[in-house]
Image 1 (cartoon, rainbow, N blue to C red):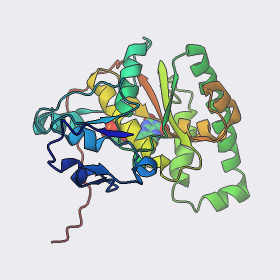
Image 2 (tube, rainbow, N blue to C red):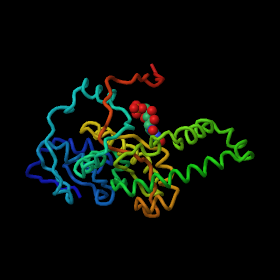
Image 3 (tube, helix red, strand yellow):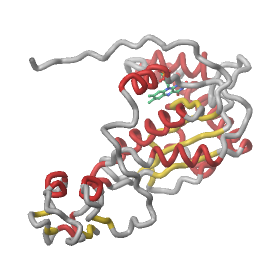
Length: 280
Ligand SMILES: Cc1cc2nc3c(=O)[nH]c(=O)nc-3n(C[C@H](O)[C@H](O)[C@H](O)COP(=O)(O)O)c2cc1C
């Protein structure tokens, strides 16, 4: 709930300008619908130069005063994006609870449709559980590979664009007996983001949270890699869901392996800018 201290307010109108739902009228006065429509995005509070606005229910959250536009300059943020790599080689050291907590705090700052914040984080750092998940993934993807080789089925699935890549990825990478763990890369931690299955915007919320996690993790020396193959089964397989503690009604969107990196990259990897369609 938005609280306006009329003694501090100098009627600058900024709170009216920034409210995404037009809930702060002139005065400033909260419109009657504010009680039900306010999504507690905190923009009115954050923009007020006089600290005249507070959000009740958030008194325990520390909010810093902002100096200037962005605390990271253009060159640094560009270098950070270009220098981040998906890590697949981890030291055999557990990721500290403190680092994990900070990573999830960063994930919690990501944009969220209607500020609904439906995303939940699942952390798995127990070596035995991770090992069980790895074995389960091996068993299920082995079954899938066998199914993909059934003549009639492979003829149908072969028409799918991803089929060739999928069968190579399963047979020659994920399930290969090269001695390297190609399923979870011997990662000491897994981090997955879920949303309520019926939330129509949840997917975007979860992926944005995950990207925040990845970027922040990199900045504190924790390497990570999105794991599509993990995410698929964490959603579909009741055994994996039980191992991770995911209840019914929640869908895993983004899954990551995490750990302190064993490998240091010497330079950026080349990336082309995506195609751009300009209007003028
Ligand atoms: C949705 C998604 C799923 C991914 N799944 C996997 C995966 O299952 N295994 C893996 O090794 N990497 C996976 N990756 C990482 C990509 O392979 C990686 O981002 C890409 O090769 C570019 O490398 P970079 O992240 O270092 O720039 C995934 C990435 C995304 C965005």
